Image 1 (cartoon, rainbow, N blue to C red):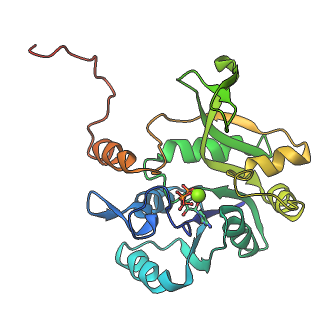
Image 2: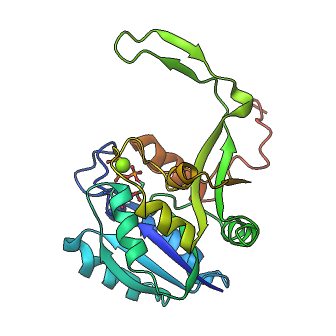
Image 3: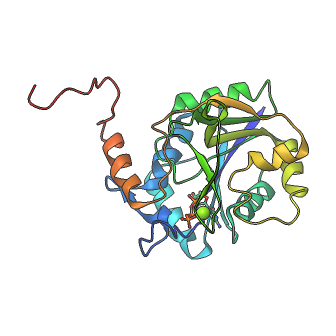
Length: 241
Ligand code: CTP
Ligand code: MG
């Protein structure tokens, strides 16, 4: 069963505000997206990768992919105005015989091979699988104008969604075909479109380390995690011990 990966990389990184698109930033001297691309290169369950970026960076990515020896990146295609537009272009570029589609944000460099293969395996039993972690903080809903709390959400039922998200090809293609009008704020992940079809979306326990680079502090955290300075095994030793 052929499995292809779509990596949307065509965002501007407005919230990071680095003066350059987020995907072109380096973490520990390596292009952010290369970390995930290497995971897919090494994953035996993945056949090939479609990379979605801005047209003006095609050559840059082609060079980076070649320099890193990534043989599974078969296509580099143009993104769209919103993330959903970019993924939609990626879906149109898939091979006809692809049965499983994995979508992963180029801005999540800390994804692991284990999470990728677990998600693909689970997608044999479910037509939509998303990595997610239980929400740690208390989350409140507020009136955006007055900034007063309208209600407190029940944390026990809340999950913070990540990528990878893996789908049966015909399901995610139908979800996008029936996407209809909607704002970028509504379509911040791919599963939401599948939910609108009424198709069940299965949660796979993600990884708290699989953070998305969104604002400046995420870079500091990601570089520390990538350097192996993870909190794993740490028991919070007191100062001076
Ligand atoms: N993305 C994309 N095309 C867009 C917008 C986003 O391919 N038009 C990609 C980003 O490059 C990123 C992923 O979707 O890898 C997740 O989006 P996000 O973290 O929101 O990145 P940006 O949209 O670039 O950041 P911001 O929202 O702060 O502008
Ligand atoms: Mg965005």
